[in-house]
Structure formats: C-alpha cells, structure tokens
Image (cartoon, rainbow, N blue to C red):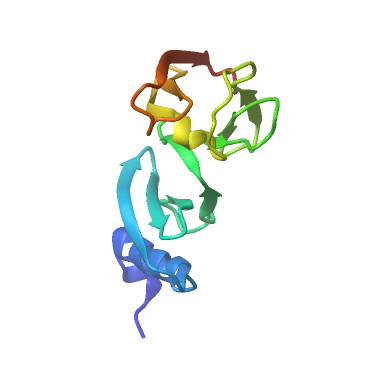
Length: 156
C-alpha cells in the first residue's frame, strides 16, 4: 500500500481523478486539461452530448467540484460560466469557491437550439469580463446572425 503523504501531488490528483471517472459507464473523451492558481480543470465530453467539467484543487483537503455543461472557466479568478436553461436568461456565472452566482444573458435573441451552448462561440474571460459571440439561430447555420457580447462580472 502506498503512503499517501509520500505521493507527489500530481500523482495524488491522478488517482483522485480516476476515482471520480470510474463510475462513468459511457464512452467519454477529454477535451482539455488546464492548470492555474492551485486548481486543475478537466472537461469531459460524453457521447450523449453532455459535458462534465471537474475542478480539482491542488490541496487534498478541498473536495473536487463538478459542473454539467460549463461554457467557460477562469481558474485564476475561480469562476465558471454555465448554461441556465430558463426563459429569462441563458448563463450563470459562479464563483466556485464561495458559490455566489450572477445571472447573465437577459434579452438575447432566442437560440433555436434546446441548449444555449449551440449559439455560443469563442467564449473567454478577459479582465473580469466574459466575452463571446452569440450566433442565431445557432452556430451550425451558415446564414446565422453573429453578435459580439461582453458582460462585466460583478462577483467578489
């Protein structure tokens, strides 16, 4: 039996990740792995079309955090943007350390798809702003209308 205290941190994280993923019975593929500011994130695309994002802290005392259908992650500022499947807004930004949330995307031209991520392209954080292109009716339509969107994120 390996002594957990002697394992390098990345090996410990790898074991932790395998434990998280071991319950998945479907085929999946890793989209990206990102490291910053004492956190690692892993995005997994499942064959069902859903996406799972797992945020792993680099210390062993904090638990992993899991999100479905995340749009964009800012590990430096500990924020994640997720789809909000409601009629009055399309996105929620969450500070994953505190759980504080902000609703975004009110008054958008409706996305014709069932999922807002089908109308979002090229999303990124820049200085506490979320920036992305909103394409309607969806990003798969060659004649789609493209709008640049920028939101100031006001979470502490």
